Length: 296
Figure 1 (cartoon, rainbow, N blue to C red):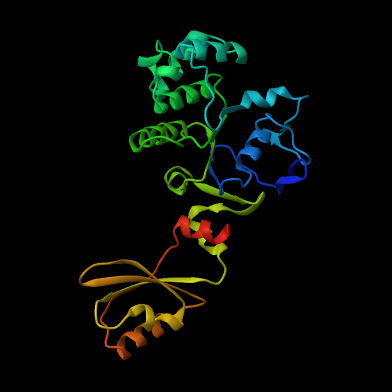
Figure 2 (cartoon, rainbow, N blue to C red):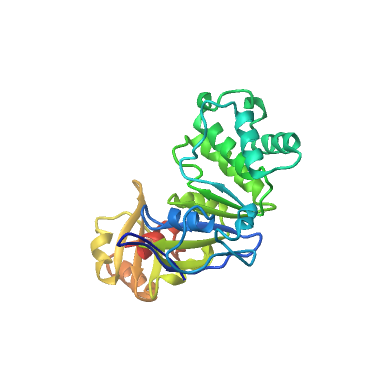
């Protein structure tokens, strides 16, 4: 029942969810949906207006600072001290965290995150991809059970995105991970379960393969036909929402969204209009389609 007001603005509205050890959660929502606010409350950076957050059964509050020991947090925009060497920054974070065997831990996370070769370079000289790696290394220094990543690939080029995703996959093997993002491909690539937040409220919470059921009563059909003089958009107009998936000189593939099973009607329309039906199948909704439907 987590709720957060900024003045009169309701940012998080009665949000509830539970994450089990070892899960990889995609925390998804449009910009301004309340993702970052929720994560900042979980990590203890800001207080909630009402409701409770428990980490390993312990309430997150000023009276229980030990909850922060369980969490490694990479915030959005990854604030770093650019005038420090990477190893100096990690040493500073290790001191703040009270990390024992500081040098060994720095060497370990540097190797894990692929930054050993840049430890003696100033952070301000590093590419954004390497800065993200330094931020991840800092979040891992105290060996937390839970890793919270807020927009971990925002602003990276395609090669850097792949590198960070591979690194996160490696970290997932022995951590509980929450990835907050508005990039849908990120969630599909990394997560086992998705929580979608919209206007401060949870609108979906399930495994990716089960999310199609959230869009009630809608059937999605993929239809591939041979091109002809007939306009398939007009032919199938009365059956539901029709859209073109792709087409070339010979074929056209359509998606038809309807209230029920319309396969017989599609077949009949093809016969009546002299169109050659090449393929027809029920289509699994993409995460993008589900997301757009639930966050309108």
